[in-house]
Image 1: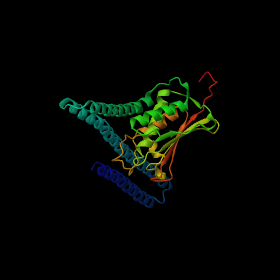
Image 2: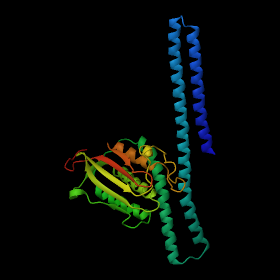
Image 3: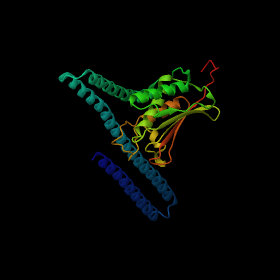
Image 4: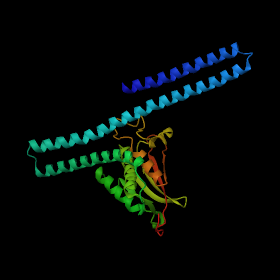
Length: 305
């Protein structure tokens, strides 16, 4: 119902804009006819008409954008609420079970593992929201020399443990030539970016999780981390939109696949802060997606940033 109201507001804004522009055109034509022998008045009328028309069009565009932005923010709040309530409800259920019933030791340990996993999920959601607000307001920080392969391997281990996946579900290919690739970065931020890439690949592979990662030199001066999944894929017109704040691709089982719409936005923000970029590619829906994070390659012999 909320979405329908917003769609109605967008349609109303566009309709009013069209009607006002049509009225201005009619007024301008009448003005020209009435003052066809007065060149100065005709020119002034045309200028005024142009200014008014541009103002109406810009106002309509801004209004539609604001309505859509509010719609994304509402979707984000609903998603975050769900992300917070679900693990809290799960933890509460297991605690009440342990409190009210005598549970065998083996089952107790199972409950504790589930509650810890739910706590990690809850903490990850909170940290993601905090990180989104922190990146824009943070002061510049010193960056340190960091080798990428160990960091990516560590993030893969965390993701496998968090989602209880077999070790072959996410694999990192050996670096060609066994070259050690370094970047200058803020380790906490870069770890957040890599974890979000892996989380996104797992999340949108609901049927079969098969994620392949690789590191390679790109364009002589950059290093590219590529994360490829075999999941739901992307339409061509969504390849750039997925990096917007709060944005979630419509029709990709949004109700079934949890998320806040902040993961890839954070990756893009972190990539830009490190002087890099991020791109997405997909053969199409249900054919998987490849996300490539590109960062400037650092010289390990260089002692200053």
